Length: 121
Image (cartoon, rainbow, N blue to C red; front, side):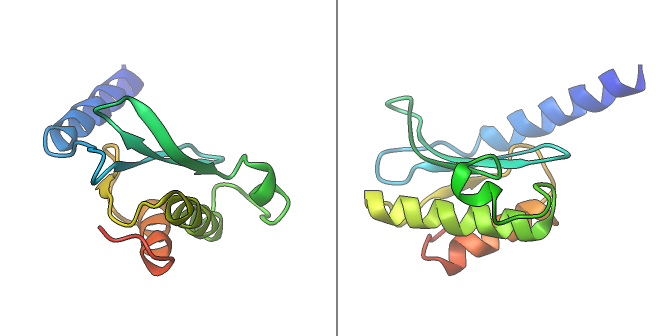
């Protein structure tokens, strides 16, 4: 019962923020998914329904360089790698979708690292 209520609250928070965040070709959406063991991020063009860049702690480039996928350090590495992929594709500006999560901890670390690496949002 408790778990269901928590999941429903997360879905409500996600939809509340998604009403205002929409990815266009000029300004795609950077969405974050966080689990207890890993963190995932994608840059999505919602009009075309296409993922333009993606990164996670599960990727082969980062998996060997991190001790734990559920840490702030791992989130920073994912943010840097995603920003590098985005700039290679030609994306400089994105809108940030925190996916119903609070903007602190690993989500904030990923966002700050992406900003430092060249993405603007």
